Image 1 (cartoon, rainbow, N blue to C red):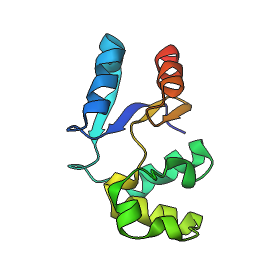
Image 2: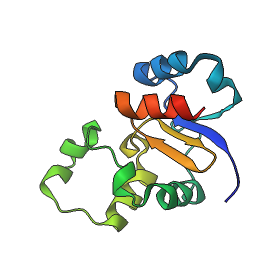
Image 3: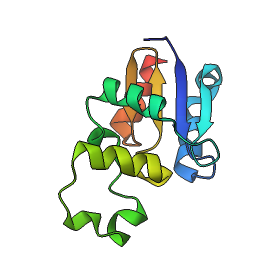
Length: 119
């Protein structure tokens, strides 16, 4: 696996911006990808899945479309999670921070503190 420092986020997301501000200078060495303007590739998602262990770990149940599409009433498979994340950027739990061989998913304080410590 290629060593990389990357943050997948939504540029217009207040929470993502707040997290970047919290990281300060540490975030400068990370490549940032706004997943709304630069669509997530299958290869990128596959790499994240390998690091996270499953597509479900990368899936956001907070996305507005989760309830809109009635997904909360369905049993989703790994194939479903993969397809949904690739089809609709809002289904990716954000931010996703990759620091070499470590992945940090979501904005829980514990996750963000762990990411910050790894930088």
